[in-house]
Length: 299
Image (cartoon, rainbow, N blue to C red; front, side, top):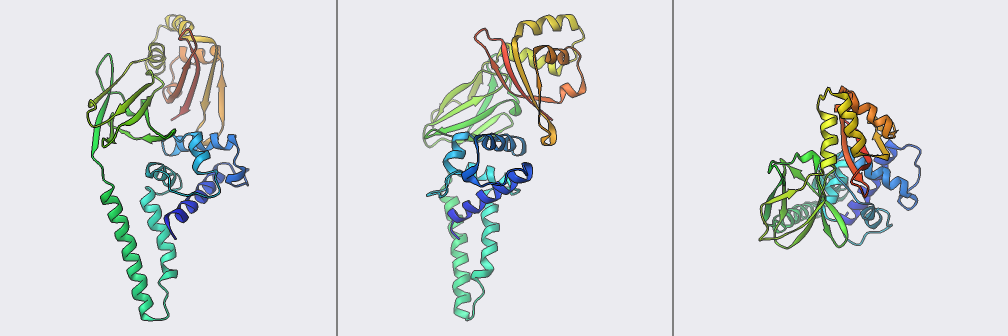
């Protein structure tokens, strides 16, 4: 079994994992609809805390055959979705499944050949990982105004290469990325303005994001214990668009709850424990900078 075969096995396991969450789906990748793709993207965001683009799924999962492996970052995400620590563990487990078949000899020379084959395979994995090591650059993500570190949960980063988005992990408000070549990175956050940078050997070790004023005010309303309800209500009227739409993704895959401006404002006016457990993952504004769309998940 080569690595392409292992990847096809992983694709099947992703389908099985998806079917556990959506038992009414009985098709395959060929019949995987645009709604199924969006459901899978949301499932990965919820279970793995990573982002996969719709285009990537079309490019690598919906196709019947794959000529080459996707980036290891993406293989790690899919492997974690199906219950493994990453791609390396997934490959190891799958190779273990087929190893007994290869190693059942009738003659001793076949035993030697099988053991040698497995040894060469493991050596190949080691050499690949050793030779593929790249110089890593650490970049800190900060608030442009306060110069304080931005909470890792409040910002996402993706690397764009050949129009394919690959998630970049942010740990302790820092990004670690190869600095061998220039790399395009896009940072997105519900509370800060999007920023695109090109990372290279000569890049600065700090990225600053400019806060979105209205989004930061909304964050304050949701997380603080403001007791002046009338003032809060007046401020909400200014920052929320009249046609506001709010989608709350319920826990345990129970569906999505919808709120309009009036309904959502009423929730914000009176602070509650449930409100503080809501995590904003997307905010969109109109031409007046009023907030017109909010997507929230329950923590």
